[in-house]
Image (cartoon, rainbow, N blue to C red; front, side, top):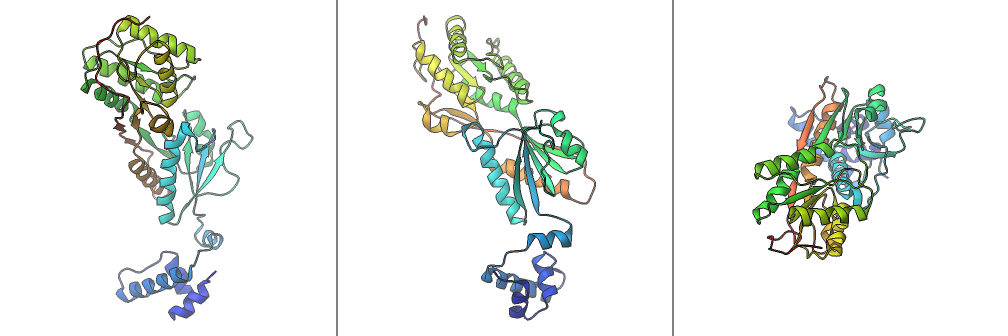
Amino acid sequence: MATIKEIAKLAGVSHVTVSKVLGGEIPVSRPAAVRRAKKIQQIADELGYRPNHTAQALRTGRTGLIAVLGNTPLSFDDHNLEEANILRRVAAMLREEGLNLSAQLCDRAEKNGLLPPWRVDAAILIAAYSSDQTEDVEKDGLPYVAFNGECGPNGSSVQFDDKAGVLMAMRALRRVGHERIAYMSNYKPYDHRSVPLRLEGYHEAMREAGQEPLPTYPNGGVSESEVAEHLGMLVREHGCTAIVCWDPWVALYAYRAAREIGLDLPGDLSVIAFNDTPLGSQALQPRLSAVTRPVEATARAMVELLNERMSSDVVAARSITVTPDVVVRESIAPPRQRGGVS
């Protein structure tokens, strides 16, 4: 691997100059210095130079590492694929700035809590359902950005507009003629800011349409059979023709329940869910419509806040709210007249 001394020899400058240029110190007010810096960078690129992060950390006091902290595993499965895609984009943006993500996934009950055993410059906090879960990083004074969760004075957050997401889903259904629309919440107990916001959005959308809200499948329902029972009640007693689901897994239960009671999808029942994952977009038939999180806008907001938190200036905690998108697929169709369902 190329060294700073080798680059200096080829560029005809001192190794101190090369070190400064590769460390980002370029006097832009001096054209000759800018030209020299470009030459040094070109030689470094041609030789495949890679910086020594340990040496940089000793010189600057910065590690170049951003920790990803969480109290649940960030696996790349269908449950959190959107989050994983966003973090991939964040990682790519940070690499352009000479920074790297470093994951520390653990149980908060562990002795060391959420904090990593190595030194980092800042953190992205995932699965931060409440302010209690930011306690470790707040006590440490580590700058951080909470990913769709709560933050304290030392942090900032990127939030998804869950309420707007429900409103957008409901309007997509109403545009094709649906009026009797239900909302089905998470099938597992879940203490997260999104739970009341989505329910609030549903009630607002029904009021907007001049409709009474239909009975809501409760957050923390426990079984697929309960979904079937609830859906049958919605159709028989309330004339429900469409549902908005917490996520593709609730939609999967709804698909099975609908077919069990003799409903055609999407002719008798249209479905849309939060989170656009392969389960909904590829496995389910008809393909599931989705309220999705925009990867680019979310990643850009996270990087902006990370840089802000790591700056030397004192910065007040703030939040950036990202508006979701809606992807309409074959699971949404105009409602049709039907008889009773037994």
